[in-house]
Length: 229
Length: 280
Image 1 (spheres, rainbow over the protein chains, first blue to last red):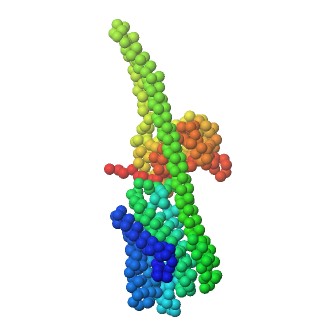
Image 2 (spheres, helix red, strand yellow; image 1 turned 30 degrees about the vertical axis):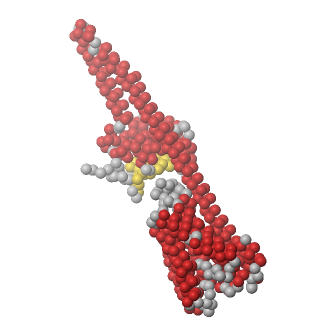
């Protein structure tokens, strides 16, 4: 999600922000064009639509009427975390990893509530977002580790899930530090400018990677391999 | 361009720009490195899998060739037995029973008929032997234990080697096709021991444990180890060993050649999943 600073930004930054927001239409369009029905990908679609609605509707409305936009950040962080972690949870096979996700998600939810109650800052939720980043990155690594251990497809990169995971890894690793520093530098114009550029660039990249994921046709077992050890 | 922006903009906290620059760059490099590593690792695994598959296909090809060669040799042997032994015998019998027989005196006629009968009896025996070598009647009628006992008694009977066998637990017979395959493997192993090992005894023991049927052959001559067996299986040599291997594959079993810990004996252990014959 963006810090909605279009009014304060330079034209190039405005262009970046708008490109980042509207680029979400590419994967959404491809999802419907290719009639994707995989349950895992539906969570990504919900994530994209909710991000789009937050950026275009909810955030401006909340900001205009209440000036309490920090609540939007927190709700979106939770929504983003649970949708993306459920996508990974749904695609994992190891029961141990799944149990880990459930435990860590419960702890994360408790921490987010605790942070909401106790945080004095009325700005960006850096702590929950930073933790969400680390958790999603860890789950993505779990997923890739499981796939290289027990491959069920001849080429890992010929599956939609792989590109979705790559999008998670690149987006969250690229944004991790910027998310961490946002709370303490929220009102710094120089920081806001850097935030806009970094966050928008990785958002565009993420949407492009989701588009690749939606472009790949589902593997109907033609390329499956049997491990013979 | 992003980083140019960081340097030109004046952050209220100057340390933040450095951490942000190196932190984001480091995370990104790590993330891309991880993805590249995963992709390359998977490619390596696939290459390894393909190599393994190719090797297995080649092994299958060798076994199939061996099996075809063995079949051809068996056919040639039967053809030679029929042509060289049964053919001349029947031709001789025909000579005794030619059209001039009725012109001869009664004693000569009786002698000729007697000789022809003898030759026909020999031919019957010869054909029976050929038939038995194809499918031992003891195996068919009384099972693996009796067939192997019979084989070992015959070997012992020659006096050249001491052959003995002991079945510890064979109350339930295996499926007939399994028994035949195991018997053929034992025949081939014993044949190899007799031909190549120069041993003074062969001892066979049978047992079963947890749905597995075990047979173990001991001998004190020259033998082979598992390494030799696998090496010979991959080469064009050792037709008999390849037949053993293909039969074990059909049985879904395994065979292990090893030297005894005492370094005095060689032993061959066969392990076959126990499939009991269903009596209808």
